[in-house]
Length: 624
Image (cartoon, rainbow, N blue to C red):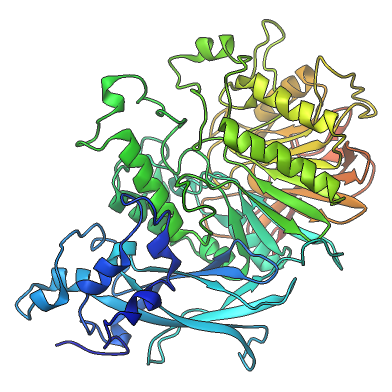
């Protein structure tokens, strides 16, 4: 039996109504292999739903992201089941062709779900700022993404979705708009910065702690939101009951949708999305390991690079991954004619510009794919090599200059990989990883030249990817003098955070003391590296004001259970106009102390610390 609830129209006007769900445009309407034809969806959709409103669920909560001063993206998924098995259906035809004799699967794949939404500055929705109606279907995995408009700058809002003509409501979401462009900001802006969440390696406690503390305004995610591996290839999900689904290396559109959906069952990740607007960007594992413009690790410049895993080409695999990412993430499509573009800029009043780069997928020259490491070292300084491609590079440098000319106080650059030099041996120019900026020296030099030539100061580089914490002065070594004791010669700082759960680069089970020895070795070789920690999984928070940027690094004592414990590892300050680090300890004093890792000319307090995650003794406190 069919149940009608607000879907009894399929006239010409329906096309405009369907367009309210931005996911029908993601990631690009102008590329037939990526976009979804709304007219075809309308033409073959039943006039009523096979489900009652009570049979539908908001299966993965709600989310918001990519805020502007007057709008924000809102997201949810409304579906009859958490499973993604009705996606990828390609049956064609018109609504008139189908009859009651068609099987339930095809009928479900043809059905459309109607959802209303609203947003208000009041939790009880007494005054509605904006509202609307959107439709979804299996074509977009039953996801819904809308843009709430007519909002006030730098204002906290509440939002909610509702199955049309019913009392079936989504969880209540909370979000916040940006300050108005070019205007003074009334208070410091606080960000939580994440990267590298690997589902089988443990619970995503780091996502939940800022929710428990209510300590930030916005969340930045620098990539590796998911991993493409099956269980056992990179983790032991059976130990924690966290097996990534589908349990194989993902390649199809269904695979990528299901993997993201599985990650979105972690309750702390759900809570973070529900309470804070996100500004995310991908790294490599949203598609595959060590991707570049023509391939990826294990699949490059060979016949297998073009067709693999049952006949799916590398290009099609990337299309599948990108489409699923845009469907499931609360993110705007930046430019319809550029289907892989995710790089974009956000202006937080006149306080700072957040410049989000893509140093992985867009137009990156060949990288280290494990079989060519020495070759990449040989060509690292080739002027033809780029992490971003010429179009993105030009945009990046121009955006930095324009931000400085507007006299915006800070430039905060979100990228995936470590920008600073990271020597790992005393001879032969050995570096920690040529899959980072160290493998693209000419590109890094062009970035430094743009900063120096145009006297751009107050630069904060952010990075993830490495599964470790790194804090450095930004130094153009070999071109400009640098005094590591005073920071003179630095043109900014870099904060690179550890992983949410992905293992340490020196081993998942390494002891804190052994990790400390390795960190001491790295800080000894790199005088601009002010602090380094290889032991803890975690995140960091930034408080950005006109006078200074404060950074606080947090470590998770255990990922084996869901809990709210964390350790304050190290705090740092960057004063406006100084372009260098002030090294504050965990107690916010100038004692030069940190709780783990290695601090240049300082003291590490946490060697061989033990933590009671039941009582919260020692250096552990609960993020309430």
